[in-house]
Image (cartoon, rainbow, N blue to C red):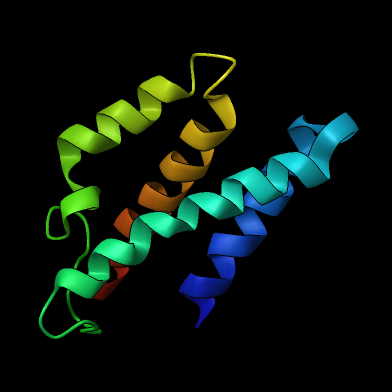
Amino acid sequence: MLHIGLHFIVPLLVAYLFFTKNWKFAFLIMIATMVVDLDHLLADPIYSPTRCSIGFHPLHQLWLVAVYVALCFFPKTRLVGLGLTIHMALDAIDCQVMNS
């Protein structure tokens, strides 16, 4: 449950701290990137508490994480890139916690 909560709290903090003028818009864009988790619907079973999503689900591949990070460097795609990068970082941390 904490993991899911962090997917909302961390983007909120980033939006509020770094995009103070338009923090609500920034937060909504970063939250919209959670659509990346639709790739979980392709898995069987759809949810497994012990499965690491990084490297398993199609939109959670390492080469795509590099693309998501690259999106952060362009003004027009920065918020999408930040949202996706934060999402992947939190998923990677979850993988480490599960496998420790």
